[in-house]
Length: 114
Length: 116
Image: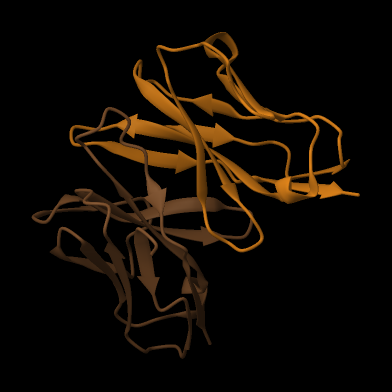
C-alpha cells in the first residue's frame, strides 16, 4: 500500500462548487504540505502544517483552506472553485525526527474546474 | 527570496547518450538543502537525492550523478547512458530552513525525452 494517498485521484467540478481534496499518510510523519502544479510553473506551496495544531499559509493560499484532522490526515478545500484552480494537486509529508526532512509526495489529484 | 532556475525546458536525446540537467539557485541562507525529483509520465513525484549546503561532494548512484558547486550556485544532474525509462520531467528544488522545518521552492522542471 502507498505511504501517502490522495483522494480523489481525478475530479471534474463546476465553478462555484465546494471541493475537498484529502490526503492520508501511514509514514508517521508530523509535517504535511499541499502543492499545486501548473504546466510550466513547477510546484507551488499552498499550505503546510508542522503538527496538528500548526497551520501555515504558503505562497498561493488565496482561495484555499485546509484542515489537519489528525497527524495522518490533511485536507485541502476550495470553498468556491474557479477555473484557474484547475491543476494537479500534490500532498507531501516529511519527518522532523530525521536529519533529512525530505518531502515525500502522494500520487496527485487532477482537478478540473469548468 | 529563494529562487530555482531550470533554464532547459525540454531536452531530447537518443538512448545511450549522456545528458546533463542544469539547476541554478539563489538563496541568502547559509544553511539550505537541494533536491532533485523525477516526475514520470504517470504523474507521481519521486525523490531522487538531497544535498545539504555543507556537503559539496559529488554523488553517484548507478547511472545518476550530481555535481554541487556552491561557487556557481549550481546543482546539476547527469544521467549516463540514458534509457527510454528516464523520460520524465525532472525538478530541482531548494529548501528554506524555517523555524519549524523546510519549505521547498521548485524550479519549473526540465522535460527529458529519451528516444530509441
